[in-house]
Structures are given as C-alpha cells and as structure tokens.
Image 1 (tube, helix red, strand yellow):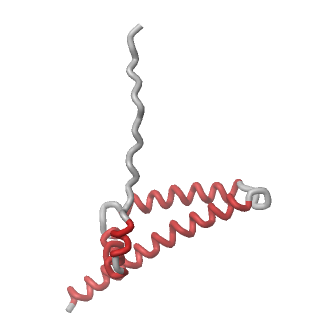
Image 2: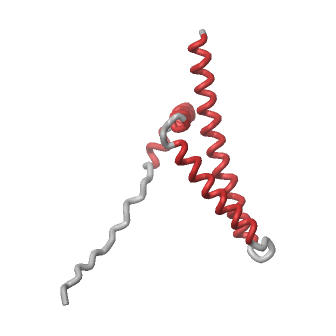
Image 3: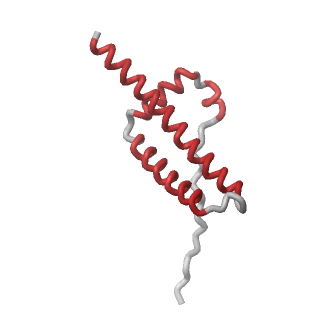
Length: 107
C-alpha cells in the first residue's frame, strides 16, 4: 500500500489594516479612497456581493419566526442596513467627485 502524504492546510492570514494606518487616515482621505473605489474595477464585485448577501438576509427574514428567533431576525436586518449604508456612502462620494470633475471640465 503506497504511503499517503498528509498535509496540514495552513489558513491564509487575515487581510487586515493595522490600526495605526486607520487612525492616521483623515476624513478627506477616507472620502477620496471611497471615491476611488467607486470608480475601480472592484466596485461591481462589491455590488454583486451586497446583492448576494441581501438575498441571504431576505431569505432569513422570510423563513424565520420573529417570536422564536428575534436575535436572528435582528441580525439579518442589521446586516442589510450595514451593506446598504456602506454602498450608499461610497456611491455618494463617487458621484460627488464625478460631478466636481465634470464642473471643472466645463469651466
């Protein structure tokens, strides 16, 4: 019988931003990065992810008894709110920058 080599899978390191980087980020820098994200190739992937998560949340809300599992219902509602708050803020920043750019071209 041939020997089977067993490998232990190593988990990929978490992708995280050090706290000092986030702490040093100003509001205007954050807004600028959000506007860049809106115009990036990654934005459609984020939107698609939000839609998939929203479908999952809506299914949870539709199939969960709010009297038996109120925490599960509240979590699904909170996830939906968070997904769309972030999306709206990024959209707002991107549109604001686009309008500023259009106005500067017209002048």
